[in-house]
Length: 326
Image: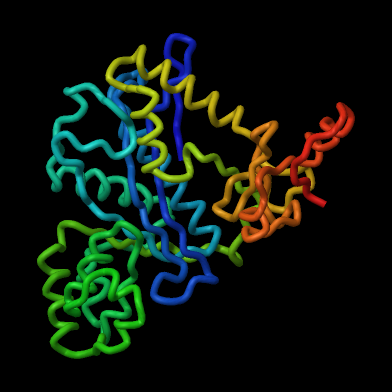
């Protein structure tokens, strides 16, 4: 989620939020849970009267919590982890003044102020620490794990496994419900009680709504690492207002003029979704293998490939010795 404001007639990207959503079709313990993965902002927001950056950013977060509540999500997890000196979460090359490290307690109070506003609007029922929510667990298998979260590392460590072993079948060889392991997990939760917030959302008034908005995917914004890496590679910086205006212009251009992959009847939304694709050697466009009827093994046997459009153009011009999809 990105938020913008016009400054001197030009858009400036001010706020960015990355989340992980685990819906009703996800198995326990992650079912119906949201993880606020990364949140970042730059200090170019203007208001009248001044001093309302947090007001706006809190409103964005409360609105997001309200939306997830209406979709049927029940819990929200927040890792209160302020960036360390020199760290960049989402925005590249902020000014030195904006990169001063924030104390954990200050960030925690910022989140608590937002959650109190959400409680006042009946969006949030309650919130507390990990220990508050999971002190009665009988097995550490009841602890939800999220990609990139501290507990993704902590839980395997409590079992004496590395993360790769935990992700494999080797974890079936250990007792995840042993009293010693559960006790260690509870002690760790108590030790890290200032590091995590777990939010319980209020029940919606009616049945969960269905998100009718189409999925909009771009290679630039689909992951925090890709977004930050692209900004670093292209020098899309946010250290001054002018840099932020230029960088925002380039980001918006990339989003709105993203390449349309595959054929017009593509069943995958004409986006790069991680499935196998084959590239045309003439127009350089990419096509999902299942949309053009080519498997990965078949593509590996081809010396070259032409899409249907380029194949027709080549045929009209006299032909070319290349493989063409049927």
